[in-house]
Amino acid sequence: MTSPRRTFAIISHPDAGKTTLTEKLLVAGGAIHLAGEVKARGANRRARSDWMKIEQQRGISVTSSVMTFERDGITFNLLDTPGHEDFSEDTYRTLTAVDSAVMVIDAARGIEAQTRKLFEVCRLRSVPIITFVNKVDREGRPVFELLDEIADILALDVAPMSWPIGMGGEFEGVLDLETGGVSRPEGDSRNFQGKVDTDVTLPERFAEEVELAQAGYAPFDAEAYRNGDLTPVYFGSALKDFGVAELIDALARHAPPPRPQPAEPAPIAPNADEVTGFVFKVQANMDPNHRDRIAFMRLCSGTFKRGMKLTPTGHGKPIAVHSPILFFAQNREVADEAFPGDIIGIPNHGTLRVGDTLSERADIRFTGLPNFAPEILRRVALKDPTKTKQLRKALDDMAEEGVTQVFYPEIGSNWIVGVVGQLQLEVLISRLEAEYKVAAGLEPAPFDTARWVTGEAADLKAFADLNRGAMAKDRDGNPVFLAKSAWEIGYVADRYPKVRFNATRER
Ligand code: G4P
Image (cartoon, rainbow, N blue to C red; front, side):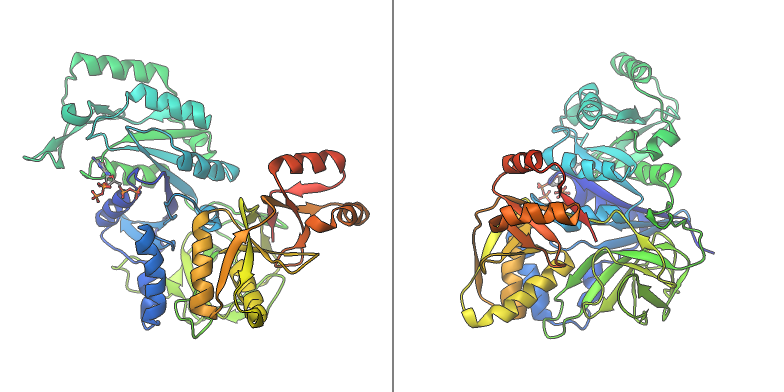
């Protein structure tokens, strides 16, 4: 018997409390499996410590992991999105592999830059979002103000599901708007949630607030939530473990199970017999001596069994998946099967790439896993000119993994790398050195951003001929226009209406 799945991610701005909440969720579920730990077994320690070095220096987690826990008969797959200042395509792509997201907001700060960016990605795919307003044990902004901000900035309907009875020093608990019960802090440090008080008379001030709220905001509407048009809002404190159980219950009750996934020629329903999935992340370098990688596949349909043969659509022979990494809750004994919504780690030697579809029959292809136009471009300066070949191999490999993008200009030999976040540049340089023994530096590039150009062959040629100095090819040989500024893109787009300048590209 398979238990229902909830595959989700947490999105937030740094410091909102994602790590704390993740921990509390895992404790509540009672089982932890970290991707990094699984892979580190038997792997070269040094490689691991190279990664750790960056992680420690920056105080962030470079790698996304998959964590699984079970509660009340439901299996939750939590995909971690790195929550540092800048983010990589990894972060975006992880969001393509989830069915819903939890948006954590600091009650004192409201919607912040990163929350908003990540939210936009969720919206692109209509990922339903449950909002958790965190840190109500501290002084926060007025609740109405927070709710209105979510509604205004994100253009979403908000449906408060609970209500904090005071915040900070006056915090008296969280009222469940559906049942009317209040869970109150208990103990000397008021550090944990006591039993739920069902027979409550609220102080007048709060009774009025709640009445206003119930009149002023949309009631919860499951369909609007699942379409990504409405967000139910819960209040709590991850640190004090307040409202966390309610959040899990909300995921169990409202968050969608695996949904049909967009694919060609037709969407794939989770109950289809054929085993299908797509790769949303590739992680390498746990052992620099072996070019082993782990491709993280989200299973979209069928029952995966260890040893099964899957074929990457469009390229490659069938791969027998003998030693998949299955991220299961600790108390599951049989880890030989996986079900739609689960994540499987597939060791391979570079055959599998981000965006690949894997299936038994190889006649479908999942869509909507884009590459994003880089926001930072740098010229790669090789310190030892005899290492050109190694450099090219390294840049290609990392482009395949989705760590960085690479552009080979049509004129000249200044290879350009592109990233969506600064951190990726650091990862690039340290991996060039550690894994490929290539010493390289990064210099400013004369370009600011890039666009994939598409259109009729003749129109493209006419455009490329006149802009040769700004044309390049990406890892897969697709034509790319390197622009000096966002303004320039607008300018050329006006002048060449038949050419499309795309900020994303699907493989
Ligand atoms: P992040 O992953 O989103 O970046 O946030 P993280 O969980 O690391 O939390 C950031 C800070 O906010 C931490 O404090 C954490 O303890 C605190 N925090 C998280 N949830 C709550 C909450 O519900 N209430 C209160 N009052 N604080 C909360 P720090 O001082 O930066 O770190 P630490 O030394 O406490 O670990």
